[in-house]
Image (cartoon, rainbow, N blue to C red; front, side, top):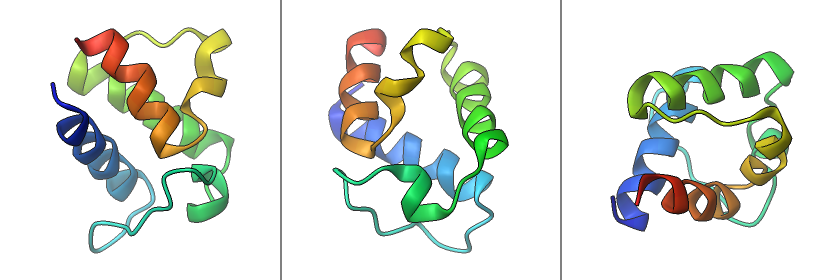
Length: 81
């Protein structure tokens, strides 16, 4: 997957989890939890959706890598190839 495809996939998951009507505008460097008022359960839902949709296991120790959109894309690019 390209970086743009990964970015789009993550944004689609955020849109579903945060129950947004349209694709969100995101500052790639800011924490996602701040931008979308995501609580810990929402964050876990995002991780679970990554697992379901893309068959990716994200160990709890790596959750910090999913803090912002940019860091999430970097992390997933390494995992998705």
